Image (cartoon, rainbow, N blue to C red):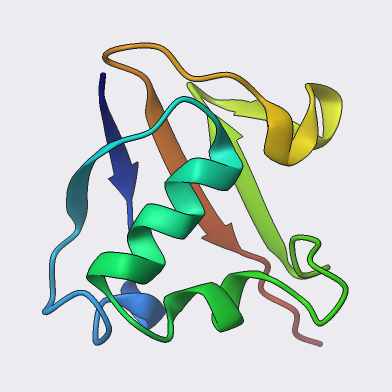
Length: 91
């Protein structure tokens, strides 16, 4: 099952400047693990020490926030797109 992951600019140094990465995963957690296998170091940028998505990282599946779905257990199907969006603060 092919899923696309849209990588934000700040993380592209870990993905050899790839903006869109194709992976095979059935859940968001599986997608993150596969990204870690392909691009070591990316998981620690996305996940906190407790194993949750970092507070300032938003993850969407087909434009729906996974916090309103099943978080990391959100199921994926062929053709889905995951977007990783780092929150930006300023003032």
